[in-house]
Length: 422
Image (cartoon, rainbow, N blue to C red):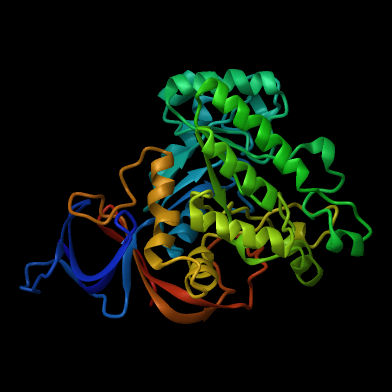
């Protein structure tokens, strides 16, 4: 048994913050209240000055395994997750080969079981992410897929997506969607705006995101399937999702820390380290994303952790791949940009980073109560630190050198201490 003594408990379900001791027995929370250290505990953690919350859940990570393990693999990705306070992650399907068959899915899940965290995987929507033929969804669900996504690529064929949504609805599994219409984009990774103009580029307009989101919300309304809009980046998309929820569309949405923290101006300073799909946009968009988090239009925060090698990111802007790592800076960015600036309370932030992501995939984690899984993060919300040393295999982050507030001190998964900051 583990006794966590003197913590400040952030409860994302009741949205309260209170003082308490926590007892973990096996893989469950045995109780939260007042407990004495009577010598019967296997381990006692002094949590004075620390906040205890459910382990974070990231519904959007790329661990590059199989096929691109020079960028990341499941073991290094899980280590980065644990250091960031994450106890559950959902791997995307755009590996090489793609997770469009039971063998590749089982490889990912089996390797995930070797880590200290819960590694889940979404299967692809289409074979080879080609957008031409749906995967055997029923067989993949039976093999353990928690949902479906062609993330990294949009599903441009409406008829194919409609078929996939009908089948996913029958399986009661969500379909996560990367909403960027390629026909409207001339250069990916940079907003159609001032930063692109300064580089002599056209970029990716927000309409590429909003137009596909509108189409897919209508398909979800028609089929009854649960859809999840990934990495929302524009003010217009936030407004659209808000309206779609208002008419009963079964849609949820996520935002990344980089999209609620940075604008397209970061491209002029950080270059390819600020290149991602969808791109960073303007200040109006950034503030709209935060308002969407506040009013519940955007349900959760996901990292879109996307490792790339230094050599790849050193290429000219139009040739470098899009994406940044995010697991080890996400919580601190949430505290620094959202809690410290009083957009969200700590329990509200935990709802966006643990409870709501868990609900998307029908998981029982994300709660702070007796009987809930013993998956926790303990962090000091006041400690300042400078981003720059990562457990990820890659270091493609625009936040290197930035001072952040909020540091993970312990991550506990299944009742085991899997990370401690020494």
